Amino acid sequence: MIVLLEQPEAQQPVTALDDRREQLAEAGRMEDREIDLAGTALLLAGLDHPDIPLEAYRRHLAGLAADVAALGHRGSTLEGRAWAIARVLFERHGFEGDRSSYDDMDNADLMRVIDRKKGIPVSLGILYMHIARSIGWTIEGLNFPSHFLLRLDGHGDRAIVDPFESGVVLDAPALRDLAKQVMGPDAEMERDWFEPVGNRGILLRLQNNIRTRAIQNGELERGAEITRRMILVAPDSITLQRDLGMVEAHRGNVGAAIAAFHSFLENDPQGAERAEAEQMLSKLKRALN
Image 1: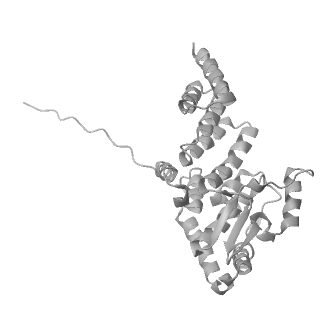
Image 2: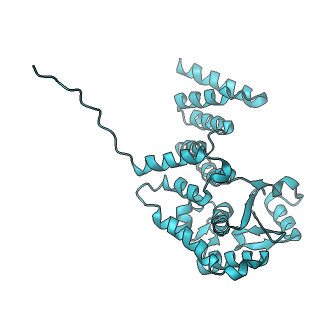
Image 3: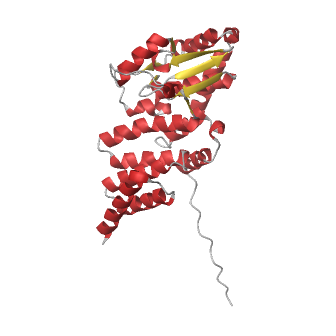
């Protein structure tokens, strides 16, 4: 008698894209302080460049920190720390704020930022923070609206740094001028603008630059994909589930939109947000009939 053995199902090879998504999901499960900010930003960028290895970019990040560490005597004062990072990042390596094509989505792709030596405040800020933290210096991103700023701490003092302006340290008048520039002539600074933003919040701010521009350009599939990436990094954000439902609904992907709104409502939101989601869900279900 011939016994036919059941053949095991062929396993699909794990691609670089799959591996990077899994690493992002792992970062999403971490405590905020444990997230490698620049490393996770590279993973996010790597989803758009699955055939390009990340090792050279990781070496570049390490090299930036090593170059600043080599100026160690400068770290004895807060002013010296700010000078050392600016000297290496903006002068020696030539990074700069991209004024001529600010809305280019490459400015929020850390791989392309490193390639082009250009970025927006949040992407350049991530490089600046990576350097400082690698050396053991204390630094935070700030909740300043429309223009990402940094707070460098040390020796009992603090400095507010603008990574888009070659790491210049901003005094109170300069901060007021910046607030009026980005928020309008009647803007007055608010205390919560200077509250620190966690690693997860910075990564979401980085990705939101891409998502916003994609949706503005009518690239709804791209907008949905970036939202899914944001959910990998911040799986507990119910707001992102609602956002995904909205963009999937607008691109006509009814099943995905329904699933996203169900996920949102399972977290028991209240008020206008809940009512809006329930209305959208009802409308989408009617569309299936």
